[in-house]
Image (cartoon, rainbow, N blue to C red; front, top):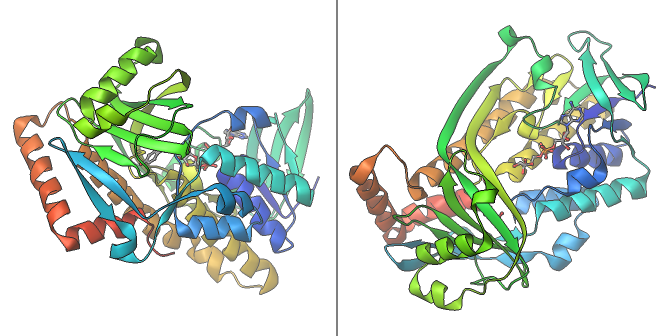
Length: 389
Ligand code: APR
Ligand code: PHB
């Protein structure tokens, strides 16, 4: 088989790239290790920047988000038992849309089906070859048969655990990493959200977050120990812990119910540099991970794909390599800013095992400053709604 761009991974990055390339008339094939249902089974963050929403619309996958997405003009921060609102709209003129990543993936998959794009699910043992020359290839096995895809470019959109980044010689890549000493225990329930906007909670017992997927479906998180397991968290224990971290109004208004899903996520900051190796490009989680505080993961994947799809379109339609040559630098400039924001928000709101009472006093001083200074609140708001591309 031959294609112009072989895309590894059918998560949001790979699917979005596939649809944008299709729009530009660029032939592409997606190779995905798992089944479509498995990909749709993963529950992830749900805050969409305007730039991401626009890109999804450009890819023909923005209709449902526009109809069903919940526009949030602000969010609340709770500390010392009081809630304070950060008004994104007033401070930046922009808002975010709350819409689950699972739904985004579903919309992109539907779009791909409608445009006849080729996705090979359950592609085993994917391997990348010759991307340092002009004729890269990807090999994989499907139903016991070996296949080869010859292509012009390979897009490594296969997430943190994928094969693309690991196919690069270690002397050509530098990685930067910070692992946080705690995790997030997340619970999804068919209950109305405790508030119409998100609440980020700083508490002496640890961080908590009240989020949502719809007016009838809530997503809540509590900071837990690194290495903790969902089996240790009965629904009752989760609700009790969330209540203990909420303010009085939240405690009074919280509607609890049986969990539909529970997961523990570790928290990590990670960046691989560069993001291009000859004819191989890395995008999304394959190149970088942010801790979930601030929900930048999907939005960063989208900005990578924006730069990459433009670069490839330029290559094919204008015969210019400027976009391709500049991809890594442009993408990384935005990546590092989102890494900084996610790291900062994580540091501000979580209980750290090693910083003691002094660390907590610093957090409270910064939180007080944040809610009393328009400049500080604006700095949070403009990062939260998304920095420009
Ligand atoms: N071969 C083929 N496919 C693979 C391989 C492989 N060797 N390894 C992984 N994959 C697939 C995974 O099964 C997954 O479906 O690549 C896909 C990668 O998807 P994601 O992990 O969702 O990564 P990405 O598309 O970059 O999405 C970024 O997802 O993890 C969140 O916070 C992150 O919101 C961000 C978004
Ligand atoms: C979520 O809804 O899953 C979510 C929202 C905001 C975050 C992180 C996760 O900062």
